[in-house]
Structures are given as C-alpha cells and as structure tokens.
Image 1 (cartoon, helix red, strand yellow):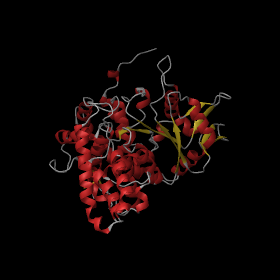
Image 2 (tube, one colour):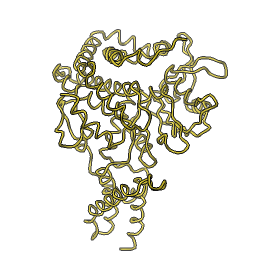
Image 3 (cartoon, one colour):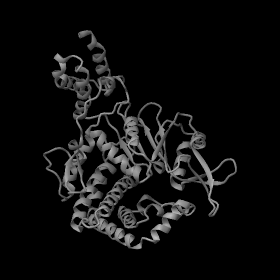
Image 4 (spheres, helix red, strand yellow):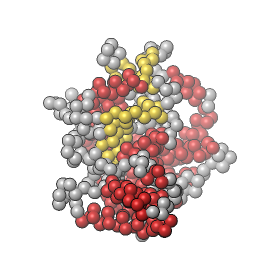
Length: 464
C-alpha cells in the first residue's frame, strides 16, 4: 500500500484536470466508461454522434472558447485559489474540503458551458461571438464560485464572501455599494447582471391556501436555490441540502422536482439504524433488472420508461457508525455514486444503475443524534445550506398570505402590508434578542410566523 499526502495533487493540477475535461463533448462518459459500455441506449447515442461529426466539431470549438475565456481566473494564486483560501477559514455547516468545493463549482460551470452550446444551437444564424461568450462565462464562474465554494456558508457568510470577491477579480461586477452579488444572476441573452427579484412574481392566493402546508410562495431565496438544484439535476449530479428544521429544505426540493417532467421522486427516510437493505428494497419496488444482449450486462432501471428515479434520502446523516467507525449505508451510497453499481446479494452479479440519481437532506451535524459523513462520500455531493429566509423573503411570503386573509374583511384589506412589516420586524428582533446560546429552546424559525398567521386566520371570522 502506498500512501499519498494531500500535497501530491496540487490545486493547479486539479484546475488543469477539470478545465481539460470541460473541453470534451463526452465529459460524463469519462467518469464511467465501463457503465456506458453496457448500455444499449448510450450505444445508440454513440452511433448518432458518429453521424453528426460536423456538429460535434462546432460544439467542441465552443467548449474550447468557453474554457479559454475562463482560464485566467484559475491562474496560480489567482481568483479561485483566493476564494478557496478565504472560504476554508470560514464557519461552514459541514467540514469544508477543496475537492468538494471544486466538484460543485465545476458542475455549475459545466451547466454554463451547456447553456452557451444550447443558445448557439437554437440560433445557428446568430451565435454568440467569442467576446460575448467570454463576457458570459467569466460572470458565470463568479456565480459558480459563490455557490460551489460558498454554498455551505449561511446567508450572512455568503454575503461577506461576495464582498471579498470584489477584491479578488477585475471581472465586470455590479456596484459594490448596491445589493450583494448573491442577489444577481447572469443572463445568456445579454451577458449582463440582473437582480433575482426581477423574476419574483407578485401572486395572490386563494383563502383556502392559507391553511395548507404545501403552498410555495416564490421568493428570491427559492428562485436562487431552484436554479442551483436544477443545474445539478440536469447534469445528474447528486447533492445534499442541509439546514435547520423549518428552513424549507424538503419543500424547496419537492417544488423543484415538480417542475421537471422527466423525474419520479421517492422518499427514503433514514434513521440511526438504516442499512443498505433499505435502499435495495426501494430498488425492488420502483426498479426492474434487465440483462442486455450486448455483453450481458445486468442493468437496474426505473419501471417508468424514460423517467429518472430521484431517490430522496431524508435525514441522511442520522445513521450511526459501527465499531469500525463506518456508516454502512453511506458507504453503500458512495459506491453507487463512484462505481454506478453494486453486487446483487442473491447471486453476486454486478448490477449497473441506469437513470437513478440520489439527493439528500439533513439537519446540521451539530444537532443531537447527527453524525458527520466522510469526506470520501461528501466529495461527490455538492452541499447547499438552506438557511432561514431573509427579511425580504419573509415579507414576500407572509404579505401574500396576509392579503388573502384580510380580503375576508374589506375594511382591513388595506392593512396587509403594515401587518406584514410588524410581524417580520417583531420576529427578527426577537430572533436577535433570544438565542440558543442563552437557552437551548430559544430556537426561532419561520414556523413561528406560520403559527401566528394561522392564529389570525382563525380569529378573523369572529370580526365579521
């Protein structure tokens, strides 16, 4: 056995590796060539690609232009290195590692490259010029760094990180005195910065929706989270949402998946005693085994044709470690992610997964009964801390509900906005004044505002 220290593979070597892979049209197949070899569907794709060599050349050149435009940001001791050095000193919800941050960031960069390719493919007569690609990609790398490197920071930490970015790069950025960078997106059509709040619709809900727990009100926070999750989902990359109870992790994921037509989600609730058998039983229920005629590879695929099965592992950090310090189900998930398969217990046959993706959600590892997951597992799973909504998002959510409630009594309908302002101000000030450091039960979440909303809803009919 040969032991390698962490210094053997430098950051510059990792940058080179990821950037070179971005140039390849078959980025994904470089990860699992053995799995792709046994798939009839991918074999058909390979045959189709041979008939489209000219198109492949155009796409490859576009990829190369994208990579060359962002290379200066990955120079030795440059922008990305400075971001990593800053981030590792901050307080993250889980242990920060360079490799996990880079995997998450480059996945988002891949999405940006794919966006450029798709845009040009839809407008063959007016494709983006090299300078337009550079303008878009350099800004997109900034966004990718914020969420890839700073995704496990809380909201205040991300805002501080955004301010530091102004010191690290000369890329064209919005005014530093205005809203933080996290409040901006980059649009491909004009390659400029735009505020997320421009896309937040003002909606009115029916009075019946005030009582239901599954009503999702779009806010800046939910739009940002959905954009990141959709990027990873479209690339078939597993990820984990971490956050305190009541922060909206599950609701955010469900609303994101409901917008995708090619996915079926199943819930697998983890506990302290969860074992790999739980995952296998879920496979038996929702998937089927099929042996291919070519190479006789055994595939495990969803029963629903042309659908991806999203396995949602809730409370993923609850399983306890055994006497060897191993979380068996986490090690099994790591194998499924790295090797894309497993040995079937019944006959010891290797089974390759097809159209199956894993996502997870959990409370912070500092909570009671939680256990840290290994770095070897976490390097494959981009991590986002879903923090409690910010003040503006809270006003957006509860003003929508208050307008619906007060419509019942016309003389009060004009007080929806003042009521919302008072509720949110009282909540935020109480949250600052009473903290868990003083008493363990001083834990505030938007659930307090929801209870307040429901109490008002129940009291209003008596005023008519």
